[in-house]
Image 1 (tube, rainbow, N blue to C red):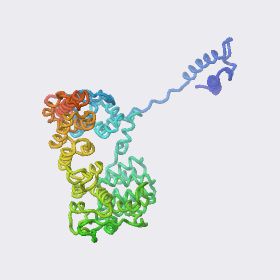
Image 2: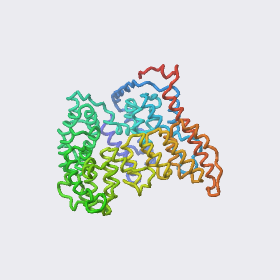
Image 3: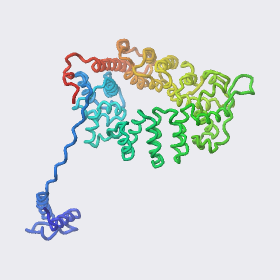
Image 4: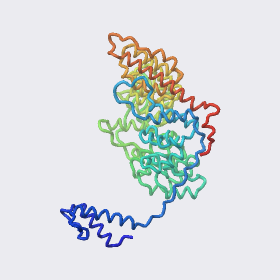
Length: 549
């Protein structure tokens, strides 16, 4: 053991070394043998380092970590296991500029591979877990699928590497095991003592099985929660929102946090039979109705002149954004929160399509239609969404609803997948691909036959017209990920280098040829990946591993 004198001498040596021997003379005890002060200091430090280490008492050995949990999912087929190793090994990003060449981009295939593997319930090979976590760390878009595939063993491994801690944060409850909803004592204890992420995960888990029990938990501690925590807890009620939540949300309208009040009002407005929706309906119909002064049917608007305390309690924000008029700001909030069903009665039994086709007096059309769009998205009303979208072939500025493609994309998400794909296919046929990127992003994958053919035909037309191929790189990238792989054989004809016209930019034919070659190669590779995951061969050694750990 080191003595007090040794400790004091060591501290003096450290001080001399930090300040320098010119400014702090080493202790006399080390200045022996006529050596220079610096050399004597280093010799003394080496001796005392050995003495201090030799005097240490060994610490008790740390407890070994708990074994990794079992993963009872079936193992990957051998071919799929080899494919995953290749995809994880080729995680280098494509160059930001220049030609991409004709080879498939493997980095864009990993998300689809993970989605299919998760769909079939496979477990990952343990040796590939570190590379899988590294890939998820580098790309946030991969994390949900990668962590679902990694499973409980991936979370167990993430605890041993600080660079993988994102997995614990990204997973509901930080990867902690939640008590069974029926274990009331354990649920209450975790709710009172758990970390915030664990409490959010617990609330979500309990709500899936017993919504009343979840509301009781939240109500019991609501008054003592922090404002930011109340907001997150309230946001978790979106899943499974029902009329049973209305009394609690009505109370939250009086919360001291403006953000909490606004979220509670938004949730209540998504319940068409809620009291708040009724109050908003009364206000909205007092502002919008049939025009009784003109010669033909039309919609008349009289926007609110003030935003009283009751409106503010129901979630209407009194202060408009910069550049926005106060009255139009209040009107938009009232109409967006009112149940869409009220407008049929207000306009004499007209359908949604007939209502949005009505002229709107005094220049209020854009504001009114934008509010109806927000209401259709919030209330997930496909009839109103169809009416506001209008005909896909009509120019956006001439039809009903929004001219913004982002708003059209949100409306499309409320209709059935096949109808959505058909609408976008008709839009592309009429308007080309230059404005279709956002709309394609909300279509189900793989694209339906009509949608895929519309995209390919539009690309072919752009190629024949001598258009710049890099202008369509975003759509081409989507096509690589979203086209049905069965289209590969039909697309092979487009891989030839087209003749360049006088109006073509030099080299565009080669670019188009490479782009279509890459598209065909990618589709064929996707088909092979899907086969490897869905049709393992008999005698696959991976099956011999069994389903145990």
